[in-house]
Every structure is written in C-alpha cells, then in structure tokens.
Image (cartoon, rainbow, N blue to C red; front, side, top):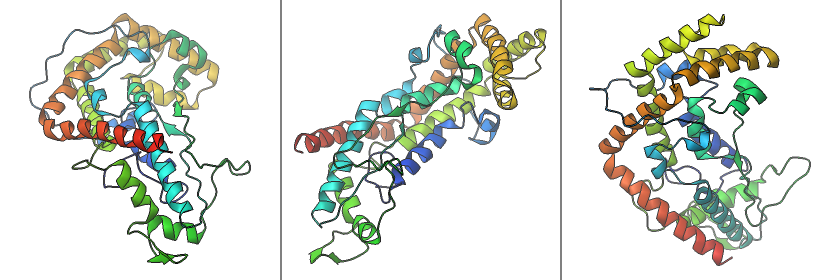
Length: 319
C-alpha cells in the first residue's frame, strides 16, 4: 500500500482491512456525532473571508446530502471492486506459494455514510425510532474470492508465520520460489494501482479536506448564529445546550426513552430554521474553496479512481 492510500490494498495481516477502515473513518468522523465535542481540535480554523454560499437546500433525508468533495471519493461500488480485486490477487499470489490465505475485508464502512453523518439526523422516522442513536454505519458487503468463513472467529483467523512472511515479503524465498519484494501484498497492490501517479485514489486525503471544511464551517458566523437560535428553542423545552453537538454528547448517558424525547425536540428546533440545510450549504462553500486550493492533487485523485476501477474490473473479469 502506498502511503496515504486507504481501502484498496491487500491486508498485511488479518486485521489490517478493519484497521484501515478505522483509520479512514477517524479522518472524517472528527465532525461526526459521537465525537462532535472534540471538533475544535481537529483542524486549523484559520480562514480568510467567509465564502459565499449558494441556495440553501431543504434536507429531508441523508441521501439528499451531496457535497463537492463527494466527487473525489470512491463510490461504495468502486471501493468494493478495488477491495475484491486486491483480495483475489493476494489469494492468487499466496496460492502460488502453496499457502492458503483468507482476506478479511469484513465491515468496511461506506464512505458516503461517513460524510453524511456529520450533520446529525434529518429524518423524523430516524428520530422517532432511535433518537440520537439513529446513526449505525452501513458496512460494505465484501466477500473476496478465496475468502473463508470461520464460525468461531467470524472469519478472522490469526495468520501463521509462514503466511505473514510471504504476505510481507520478509523472506527472500519460500518453498523454493523467490518471494517478490514487499510480498504478495505489494504484488496485489501494484496490480490494482498500475498506471497511477502520486498517491492515487487517496480517500484519507479527501476525507481530511472534508473534515477541515466541516470544522471551518462550524465556526462560520452564519452557523454559530443559527446555533444560538437553536439553543433558544431548546431552552424553551427545558434543555440547555449551546449547539447540537452538545445535545448529542449529553444523550450518551440517557435512557432510550429520554434521549428519544430530547431528540424529538432537537429535530423540531432544527427544522424551524432549516439548520441542516444551512450547514450543508456553508460546508459546501468551504469544500469548494479547498477544492480550488488543491485542484492539482484532487485532479490526480479523480484520475486515479478511474484507473483503479479499470484495473480492478480487469482483474475480476480474468478470475
């Protein structure tokens, strides 16, 4: 795996894919629900003149949240294809050395869902069903060719030393055959990323930009003024919070009934001023500014997404 590239390479150890997902998620989740209270420390807030915003959308479901940087993230289908191809190529390489191997790509998070979650709930049915606990990450259903399921471990089986040595290329030869530098991990990774330049389809880089934009937007006066209006609305119902993230964090220790009740009030206070729509519009403006500043790097990312998909589909088609 090249530095900074997430979600498309073979696993160095059984848990690597899961660890990769966690790392990728943390890059964007700084602005999300569970850790919203820590947003201030996630990014440099220094900005020039606040960017102009376009029309403020009315958001009725998370599916309606579309942001400029979405175009530079792999779609769930693209992400799944590159993971499947990498897993299959790694298995094929390991088989060539007479070794079995089970890639663990279970529970890989949806990139789209990660981004949308930052704005909190927008659907009344979600609020009525689960309140602040509405957000359960949707995970990609990935079952790479060659993967096996171990009922006792849920598919996660500790790797043997011989598997690790060939995966990582820590031995010069195995079973009388030369082991490629970097091992089977690098063989599979290079095949999927062949023809790319720079860091390729770097989801971590794009996720960091998205987080930076979100943090900046949350400090924008248009948003902080809206939070004051929201806070006043909540206070009328007996809840004292400065911003929605505070209510989310306070709900952690509440009973399901109490947190759902508070979430219902929160939802109505957001709806009265189309708070989520405003947040999306302001966030989009900051994202556009960052896209302009990082145009060359993002153009490379977008090109690489297409290259990776072509390589992945070619590998899968030749299985």
